[in-house]
Image 1 (cartoon, one colour):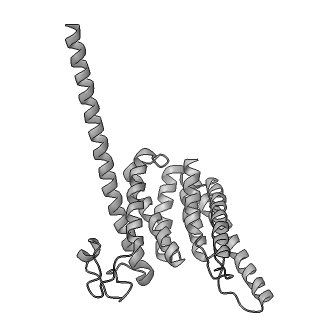
Image 2 (spheres, helix red, strand yellow; image 1 turned 90 degrees about the vertical axis):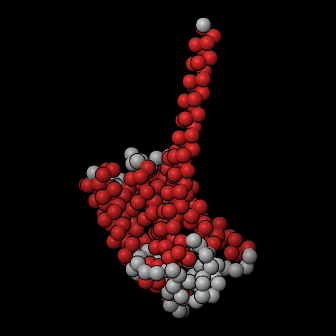
Image 3 (tube, one colour; image 1 turned 180 degrees about the horizontal axis):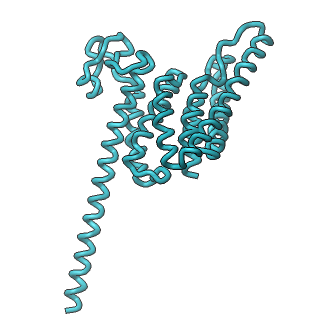
Length: 270
């Protein structure tokens, strides 16, 4: 009798374990599919906003002819010239799916999984556009001001979110002014104007909406972490250019905002 009860108990435990594992697999599968959908949206916004500053049909980068949405969503070649989709398209899809799954294991602050997805979409668009075009658009920044002050207020309270945005503005605006002064000074030393700036106005916009998001005083730590990460990356990149004899002064500017975003995210987790 005791053996029968024990056997039934083991069978019940095994069944519950199987149900739990199956549920977990389904949850991760749904997360991956959701991440792919987020990646498609990131690719779309990164394809159309820099060129149009508004929503429009995505264009082929080779022949400037519009894709129809069926061709675009199925990642097919351009029907006009046969141009393949860029490698970035697939990198973004994979990265978005991976981030979506990781959010199940490492929730962001006190937000639920679904609450975090708009942040993943928005920051993904900012990162991809800045890496490709070295610009943080005014249009996306306006969305960021509204979206992230809402999230910042929910997470930290309105006053901390507002102070964080003001602190982000003050610090990044200071870097922006110093960058202009340094560029003019360097231009005088070289005897010709230098058009590249180390810190753009878009980085200032990013400092504000990320300040809303991180709140005060966390934004200061986020900016410091971003600067350290950017400095480390720039040093490695510089060494690679010099060793390959491809270095030219001010010929290879690097985007800063993606590192600022990474710095702010690191503050939340560490």
